[in-house]
Length: 219
DNA sequence: AAAACGGGGGC
DNA sequence: GCCCCAGTTTT
Image (cartoon, rainbow, N blue to C red; front, side, top):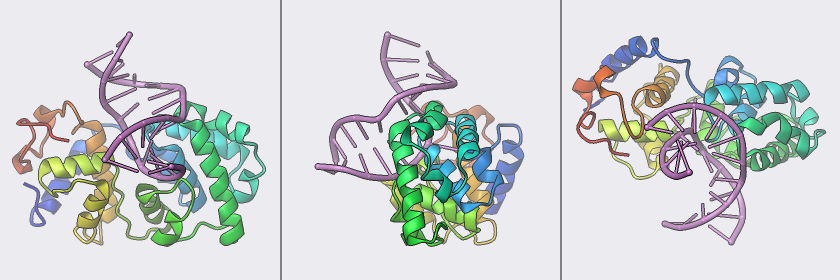
């Protein structure tokens, strides 16, 4: 059982363990840039998509346009072609363009830095909005993707039905100091080790803190 | 050849 | 709540 008392210990273990696995969340682009617009767009591209593919797609698109003003000049087709391998390319292209337009019309071409404003953009849900706050503005955001939702429930850290509830429970529980690292590690751990169907419990050093691993893989 | 996969929108 | 979007990776 993961509780507030041992969460620091858990995080330390995670850090050591993670090093052996792949690099983390939402594509290299989103993690290595602080430009809110790039973070926003690459996160939109990343929906239901692997990291390396997201990164490639983002790079290809940012060569063509890396600001709202440039983005709206592209045809839908051009955007679709750039992000094609990421899947869902039509809806994503449309959302990226529409959101770019909204940024120009309502926010002087800049990405807003509050949760409510971000949620008003096209193709931006809670996961995307919180990640933009975190990576783009260094503001306290709780990014709950399916991994975080699944493993925090599996561990017994939270008991929630919907990702939105998980976010609400985690908000305030993640220490203000290291929330970014912890959130990142949660995503990475869920992605690389604590898989949906067959978690690699034999390699998991959180076994002692987990109520479900190795017993019953529950989504 | 299936099934699973780092959400969000429309209804 | 249910269904759709789509290519890539894994089984």
